[in-house]
Length: 463
Ligand code: ARG
Image 1 (tube, helix red, strand yellow):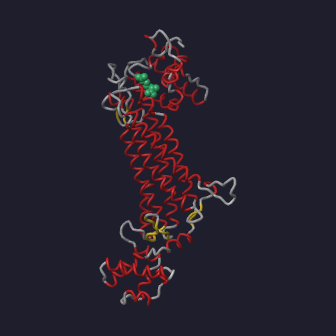
Image 2: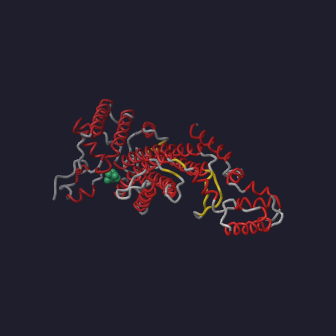
C-alpha cells in the first residue's frame, strides 16, 4: 500500500510507506510521554534562535504561543496524535504548522530530531532521577521511624538464615538505611553526570548558524552544553545509569521484601503487615498474604531486564545515531514506572508494619544465640585462647542441647564440669539484652550505637 510521501521528510520520495513500515517505524505510541519535554526543548530553542538573530522576535513569539497551545491540547487530551507522523517531534511540529502556518517550519532551523530526541529523553530521565531521589528518601524515613521505635528491641541476627547472634531491630532497620543511602548517592552522582545539554549538536556535526548552546543549556536547567556533538546525539549512557542504579536499589528492596515475606509468616510471626498492604485468599479465610512484598521482590526482574535490553540495543552501534536507538525508551519508561511504584509501596509497608517484640525476643534467645558471648567471657575472664574458649562453649552447647534447654538455663555445676574456673558471673553475659548492649564496637548492634546512627541519618536527610 502506498500513500503520498511524508510531509516532514518526504521531499525526495515519490510514494508513501507501506503500512507495516509505518507501524514498525512509529514511536508516537510511546514517545508521546515526552511531549512536555519536547515542547520545553523547542521553546528554549526558539528563544535562543531569536536572541541570536537567527529568527525574528515576531516569528519566535508566534512559535512560542503556538507551542503553548499545543501543550495545552496535549494536557487536555485533545491532541490528535498520528502514527503517520511517526514520533512526538513530528507530531508537535505538524500541529504547530496547523496552528500558526508555515512559520512553524522555522523552528527546526539549526536543529535535528537527533539532538531533539536526545534532549527530550535526557530531560525525562532527569525527572525520574529526581523522583527516585525523593522516593528513596521516603523509604529511608520509614526505616528510621522503625529504628527509633525499636532501637533496643532484640531480634535474632542471621547468617545462612540460621540464628547467629542477637541484634537489635533498630540495627537491622538501619542496615537498609545504609544501603539506600548508597543508592541515593548513586542517583545523585548520575544526575550530575547526565546534566549536560545535547541541544545544538544538530544532526551530528553541529551547525553553521551562530547558535548559543550555553543559553539553551541554562534555560533547560543543564549545567553546560555537551562538548562533542557526535557524543551528544550518540550516547544513551544516562539512561543506562538510571537503570543500573534502579536495578541495584530494586535489588535492595527485593531482599527486604523477602525478609518481610518470611517474617510475616505464621512460622516466624516477627512482623504484622498492615491491612493496607496485605490481601486475603478467596478460599482460605485465615490467609493474610504479603502480596505487595512479593510483587516488590519480583520487580527487580523487569528493571534489570530493561537494563540488559538497552545495553544490547546500544552495544554494537557505530557512531552516531541509528534508528535502533528508538528502542531505548519503552523499557526505561516501564522500569521507571515500576521502580517509583516500588519505592512508594515500600515506604508505606515499612512505615505501617508492626513488629512482634515478644516473638522477636523469644526467637533471639533460642538457638544458643549467646554462645559467642559465652566464649568471649571465657577469653576475657579466664584468659583462655579464643580457640579453646570456642571448644569449651561447644561442649556447653552440646550439654544444653542434651538437656533440651538454652545456655542460661544450665546450672553452674554443669558448667564447671566442663571448665572448673567458670563462675556465676558468666550468667550476666548470657541474656540477649546483655549480648546486644555489649556490642559497642563502631558499627555494632548496641542500642546506643543505633541511636547515634539514627541521629546522623536524620540530620543528613533533613539537612
Ligand atoms: N523517533 C526517533 C527516536 O526515537 C527520533 C529521532 C529520529 N532521527 C532520525 N534520524 N530518524 O529515536
